[in-house]
Amino acid sequence: QVWLVESGGGLVQAGGSLRLSCAASGRTFSSSAMGWFRQGPGKEREFVAGISRSGGMTNYADSAKGRFTISRVNAKNTMYLQMNSLKPEDTAVYYCAASKVPLITTIPSRFDYWGQGTQVTVSS
Image (cartoon, rainbow, N blue to C red; front, side, top):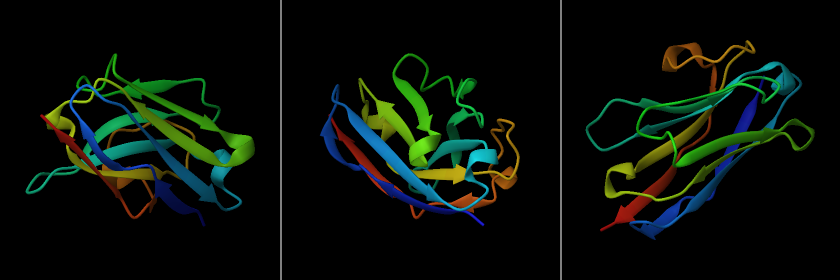
């Protein structure tokens, strides 16, 4: 069982930055790969970034490469998404997620636990 609590969303102008945090609790956290997804209004939930159990392996959607950085501090049971150079098209509800395995996956159905979501709005 893993519980996830997000924070850090908000309103920012284009070109600005936000840092999302996801605090996790549960005995299986250190054995889980984690990721960030986002969902705009009327759109499907899409993969943004993923990170392996150890934090040594990461994967990014093409739209996030060079601008976003995913990280985790297992000792603090926390995952982060640093978002720089934000664009209006980044506007969405952002969700953190955890899987039961340490492998990175981009498929939403492979993630077993989800946070409540946090709104990110980027104005032009």
